[in-house]
Image 1 (tube, one colour):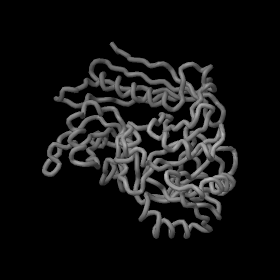
Image 2 (cartoon, rainbow, N blue to C red):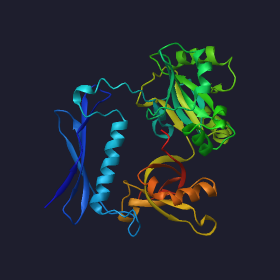
Image 3 (spheres, rainbow, N blue to C red):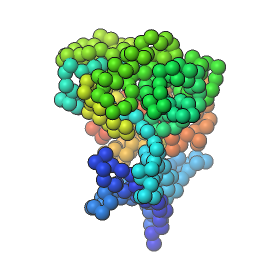
Image 4 (cartoon, one colour):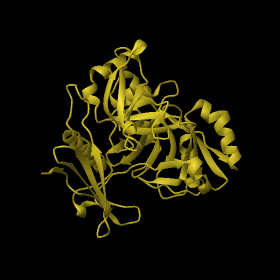
Length: 369
């Protein structure tokens, strides 16, 4: 006899104006377990997908049965949808006041959408942040609309250039700090948090980018740290894009951002008007376990992450050594149970034939967004 764990159906407004629905449940027949998802537009054909789930961390204190793991996975996916503005009440879909930043496509895949002349900027390895001025002051939110409470030192500077309703897009960054140090100072207030800088590269409104750029240029070029106006350069050909990427941005930063001059800002949308060029690939994977390293990594964690796109049973998860100090990686190993279910950003060169990342490195646990 089958047992189920169901979750409320979720709804959201699609970019085409239609209402989309999504639901998930965990199912078991006491021999194996799976998670079943259904999605589609309301009053249209609904697609159903099923994925078998196995127990995790066998032999450890946090061991889960297949059904327990299916429930955890389903809960995680359901919560992730809620974080993306999905609601349980279909009548509330247009009442969600959540602003999520515009995301970029890969230049190597969508470069045919770039119109020259265009603009290029360095791609930063910082923490994405929207700054929004309201009647109550400046609100700072992450890529997933999580509020930041460590950035009040930026407020006096932003108050001088923003009016109520203005929204600025950029990254919390420091050119001399590691990504991990930036995250630590954003997540929790420390004395050094006051040294965090706001590198601004866009204004979120209904104007084309060239007009938004003029607004930024007029107001921010006269400011010094902690506000930084990101270097923006006009480019006239694809060859120039690759040239500046190779000679400057790939060496000094994380890569290159390419923007169409006439591109509009689209909240919560991956837009072909904004593209990124990197010499590596970053992706997020869910931490499902881990083990102790050996040699110089003894006492340090080696994470095991879920790989839902793996083409074989062996490829459904893989090990990742994270970056960080020895002390931090030992702390992660000691507190491994509390990290299971969180997202790990993994950088890699390419995928194997079985869709497993080659030469993966863990960059950061994404619990700050």
